[in-house]
Amino acid sequence: ENSDRTMHRDLVLSLRCLGRFFGRYPVAIFLTNGTTAAEKAWIQQSAPSGLELIFEEVTLGFPQSLLDAPGGPDGFLAPPRCMMDDQHWWTSHRSCGCRCPAWRPQCWPLNWMHATRFFTAGMFRTTTFQNGNFDFFMRLDTDLFMVAQPALDPFELMAERGCVIVYDRISREAPGCFDDFDECTLVFMDRHGYRSTVDEEILRIGAGPAAAGGQWTVGDAGLFTSAAYLAFADFAASGIYSNRWADQLFLLRGASLFGPRAKLWELGEQTPATSICLAPLFPEGSAGNEGGAGPGWVHRKGGFRDPQLLRTCSAEDVFT
Image 1: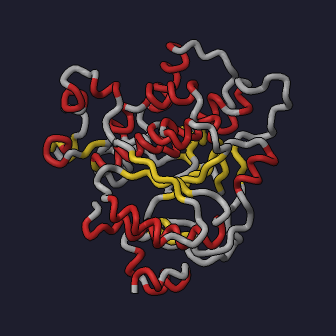
Image 2: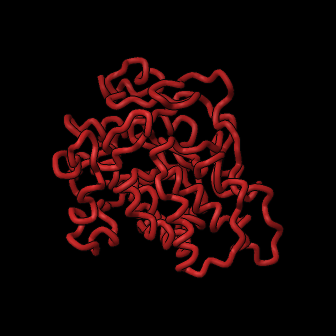
């Protein structure tokens, strides 16, 4: 996954791209113990001048619900889970969630599942988030590169409107990628004595749960570090591994259950008109729109090898 230290190099290029437009905000970099002190120093030295970097070492792993299951993760993911083409992919490839998407089934690797668990819960338990110094956050994949001038500042938009997520659209997750997610939500609400009013506007799209996000996420730090949201994230975590539930499901469902229109935070204040601010981050026709990303973004593993990306983000001095 990180041969030739591709992730570290893409990270530096992503920082160069991001720093052109969001250089006034600090950037947190979550690293595992596989990153050496020399590599960390190189990232610091290669980042845009003046950009504040916060490094925090993290550990990725299974949620407690899988560790406590009979037989541990192997027992939980035993057949009939993780089956495709009469093969048990957890045993052979350490992959699962094999119905996602239904029209082109595939099994998803363990590193994807661990990363999603981190994006939906572990990240919000880090010291960086729990110290309470941040009101809002933008999470980016390391191989996602901002190549156009944003049309707005999403943090200012959230502060102005009171929403807890900014994204350009609400969509329904692909069939096969949300099996039993609604049922899990109902069980959670029953067991935890949920007494608030769900924000139904962002609960479902058609026959499936609503989703927002993907390679990047903008959200309210207070909501997603709350005990209420994290209890839901922990309760539903096993579905990441068995059914390939993604962060875009967790975060929008969290906003529906615990956001400003769910009346948990009302406390006499006027309830915002919406929990999610639907606003394109980039003007129509912006550069980018590559690698499955929208306008303004290029999504490409090994992007540091692309001379055009290096020129766009003024990173030629680092890689040439």
